[in-house]
Length: 107
Image 1 (cartoon, one colour):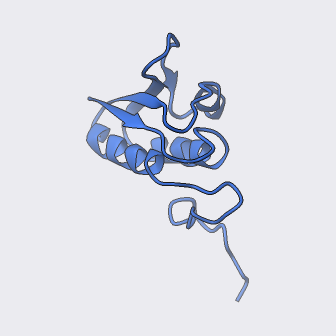
Image 2 (cartoon, helix red, strand yellow):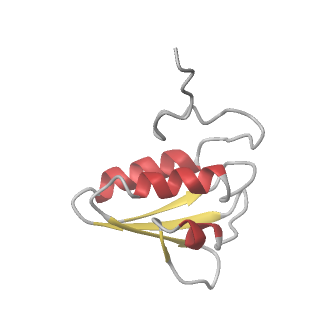
Image 3 (cartoon, one colour):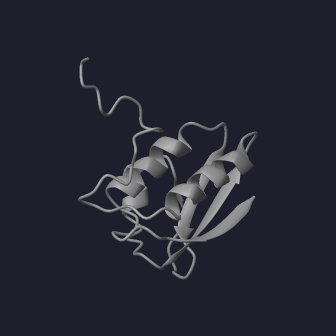
């Protein structure tokens, strides 16, 4: 399965959005690759932080996401949700719901 997605986060696909994408890709029983839809580059594993950030994808650019395996459609849905959600680099648009216990207050 494949899907084309326009990257919405202001900083593009690095830092927080890339980290969320990699964590999410690792949660599914699927082989997921991403590549710039409008470039000459090769696909990279969505489970590789270096590969994903190495794409140098900016806001407004399109990605081609390919997933194969039992959870392919669910993986595509989850990754698309990350890429189409605005994330403020200095803000807290990432609620941490998918990333575990990022906000333990020790109550």
